[in-house]
Image: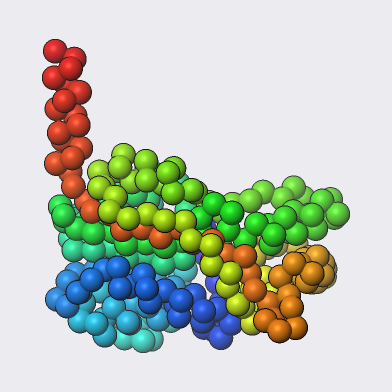
Length: 266
Ligand code: BEZ
């Protein structure tokens, strides 16, 4: 949630995207015992998961680039500030950084990881999950097709970042992390209706369009996706693929790699 700060509607998110925090409990478990731990929740959204971390005994700060989401978090009694993953105002403060369903909005992955590493104490852990390679492929294809069918919409440009595990592991290592676990997990995800999903998550692609064009975009995408993502038995199921990871900040690794490089040079 980096740019386009006003694309989020906290009320709609809480009502129609409640599956986002609900499906993230296994991710919280990856943090282990967090009682008394200082945790940063990057992209805290409406604060549902941040509150769960607080309830498990952690001292948590949430950060989000949407003023509306920060307000929604604060209304739950959570410490939350406005800011982005690529510019975190912290230095070696946290035992853990947690992030759910956010980093696919951050194409500047190296910068985000540098900032996350900087915010962690040495030995601190980074636990995250977000869209990985192949995520919502059919939804993106349908959106692309609708832009092609309507040249007046402009050129469709995918802004989401869905890396595979090897690519992201390399970036983590480059930022000074030791990767304990990283996995790409296909997770077909029931959503209440594709129309609500499009309303919540695709404003970044349609904010330049007139209302009638936005309506046309959403109804045509829905039409194209119906045979792929909808069945009367299961309703709408989106083709999600998660990239889930746990990594430990360890600058000694970086230092020793640097030392052996220097030794080889001499
Ligand atoms: C997700 O994978 O969580 C996601 C990706 C893009 C838009 C909305 C959700």
